[in-house]
Image (cartoon, rainbow, N blue to C red; front, side):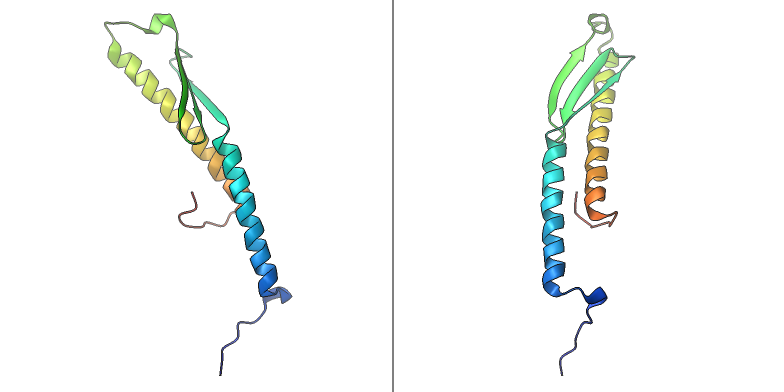
Length: 112
């Protein structure tokens, strides 16, 4: 005798597969949208500004001339790191937000 999984809410297997397929397509579209977006952040009151895309690729780094002090390279490095980390955090948040909008808040391990 075979065990049967009861239909939940009268949803057929084909309907369920169609919904999963649609969700996968929506997720791929949202992922591409975020990957093509730009995220910027600055540090030091705008002394250093960076832009990254949703793939975490650095697109630009801009520095105010007064922040380039050969006697204080450590500060410049810290400002660059801080602004890069913030821009990447923004990109990650955007990806999580967009994926959550598609999955309805389901936490799917390994999704992103």
